[in-house]
Length: 185
Image (cartoon, helix red, strand yellow):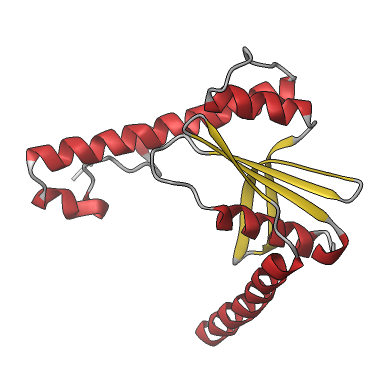
């Protein structure tokens, strides 16, 4: 049998694909709702790419309380780096939407384009990863974490008491995962 070649689709997954087969049990309304969420996720990815490009280029958006505009303009104003990977190990890393560290102030901003309420814990994990990767003691710095969502800005100022336990969990859980990986080899 000579199978048809679909090289343009290699590595991709269809929305109604076999690996996510649960859709076969969906009603028409449920598949429409699920696909709408999928499209919103794709739009969120595109908005993040657009925002990162604006920040890299120093291209401010019209002054507004709109989430995207405020996020981009603040990141440019604070001279932040967009889409920065923070790495502790192959088991624990993440990409901060925008980050800056000057003097003793760590600033991390996160753009949320969806309706699901954001959580400051995500930014606290980024702060912990930053401290671990760059060997910075959280007691020696100030932190300002901002979540931009629904035309509002939520600001957090975590302390060493907030970040040190997350750092400890990262170290401990990474060790546990590595032991399991060693046993599997």
